[in-house]
Image (cartoon, rainbow, N blue to C red; front, side):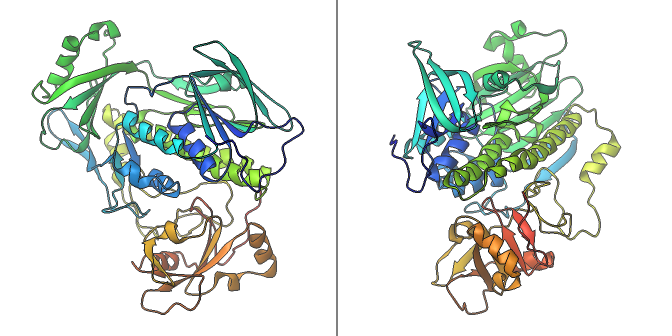
Length: 528
């Protein structure tokens, strides 16, 4: 990979730099962080202790929020080729009673074709494609088979010491910042002395990955078999794979399932036979509900499992890590160019911790349903539709994302656009191109006005502050009108203008990650 320094970057610090950002761990979290930074011109050095991708499938799903991140990176079409749409979720008893179902409405965030809300994945395959995407980015170097043994920092940068696991040779790398994405047992977190708080469940689970030999009825549901003693996760993975996650009983151990012959009775109890699947592999694990005391120590920032661990029931563990890394990536890239102040790093944990906590609590609640621990009142509350809401209600698992805190200005809530992710319909521009909104928006901060120039709604002071961030100003015209200038979009699917009207906003200020930072009538730049 090229080590040429991209134009526009500041001079090296007093000790010099080998790279801009060191990424420790090159799983899905580290990959998204490295891809985001390198795509924006930063030099990245990634350290990965293993040479090969971990062969076992861990995560099972991605949704349209994650796909929108892939779209920004220009790789969503490639990833879509190795994943598959998910039909819906259901919770059923062994007696065949359906306890709860969550249908997947069409996405509002703008994936391709039929725009599904959720996809099934086979993680090793998806991860391999992400790695291939990284190989095409100049400025991204990956050191496989290298274990980080020390992380030291000062006021100007971070020094990473690493050991080649094959030769034992040590090297040091000087970076401006470091992202620790080295998993739940993060050595970096331990080197920094950051404690992990929370609990680990006692129950041991077996994860059985199989190759499909024939289709069976409703295989494409993500099914949770609810039972106090033997609840099961039953999910189709992409590329002809299927998974079952089954808890062991208190008197059972890994030794009781040491061979395929010993594992088969667990599947047969679910009606699965050798005519349906071949057992590919299986592993054992325990559920965690844990979070790091702090996600940042100076110039080193934790991401993914290194700073939060959650049960699998919401399908959000891996995705939360990828979103952490994307949040860091777009901010760090702009800090490196001097376009953003370093104080922006203080917004990282403020924005991402509430999201990780939300999905952790959601996963715990769904787990109670699966294990038949939830009361009828709790289940009813999960399915209850609130009355008189401005925002169309969706179950928390499928609802579009909302930022609860961070770089935002103005009141939040059901009737506010602030903190919400902007929908992404197909739009047109003034010269007749038609594409998804993000493909037409300029990179960076954007103010969108409902059929008028949003800059006209700003005070001179507000305009100066948005200009300092390099903001762009675009008017959104209805599809029944003419455009009037170059900085305009056409709402071809009648989505953006009604969305703005729903929240009574003549304009919104949109962050690079497509969350609304402020909305009319108060378009003040949020404070740091």
